[in-house]
Image 1 (cartoon, helix red, strand yellow):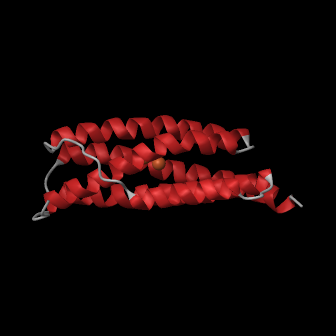
Image 2 (cartoon, rainbow, N blue to C red):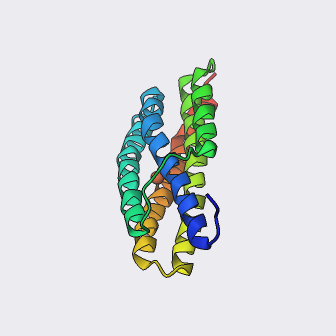
Length: 165
Ligand SMILES: [Fe+2]
Ligand SMILES: [Fe+2]
């Protein structure tokens, strides 16, 4: 399909992040099961529920822009998920894995933050206020999750990994 306008590019990017979110719904429970910290697992489970809402919010956005979501795999997120899975398959201490799982999860969050930030700007440029509001709600949840992950790393999980010998 030819991308002739900013609207076309926005739909292209929406399909990309829709794929990313749906891949995360599959991958996050696997990652959450492998971590040792109860706090980190709880944070991952909370964000899994938010991620399911992100998928639903994107369906609303597709309706608003008059597009039926179709398959377009986000290879960037696929790569990040593969790297997370590969880390879990290493011979790795539990506490060190927790620190690594946070690093992996934050890469995923930063990918989403970039995607939603761009999409919010496109929605503004196109005067799609309702779309922008929906995307902004998700963007704020991604940013908050990123901060929670930083706090968990810096308030204990990195030190636990450091103490592992
Ligand atoms: Fe998300
Ligand atoms: Fe996220």
